[in-house]
Length: 194
Image 1: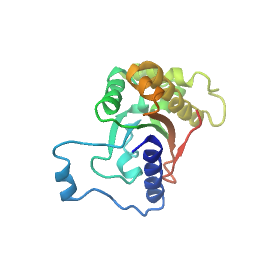
Image 2: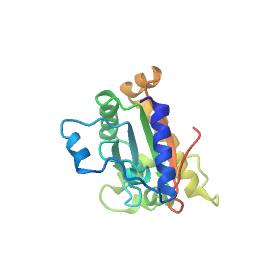
Image 3: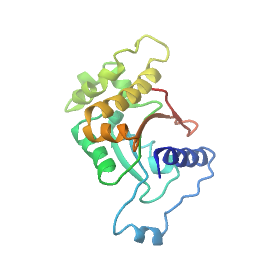
């Protein structure tokens, strides 16, 4: 499967999910047994850890279909990059979707400068997310939505420039990295222009 076919499969699955006409594919006991000896996902999804954003459900996919990496605000560090490199290098995944979502709490906290005053490692999370939002006017009416989308777009560029493995796959057209946005109310995933 190439990246165009993988993307089409995801978007068709999302349309089923948004219309509440899921097929729940590849979720049988038999299919689970076929995966014991290995996995062959057709796409990788980098998304937020938010409990309202489960990729397998949103794209109506089954066991073994998706390689998922989730962090708050889909923040990227070396482990995230290595995980996606593994998906591309070892599993030959042709598509990575970077999926932000409406009402992202991590992005909202950063835009409101709340995360810097929280305990633990939360200021570190804010530092990872902040550069993507530097061009967003915090006073604009839709600043949070702009920041969420900017975060996804910036992450796509960062992945391409920070990884020799991902960049090489992009150069040979064996990989596409796309930014997307999930709407909690409608259940729809829309691709973002980069």
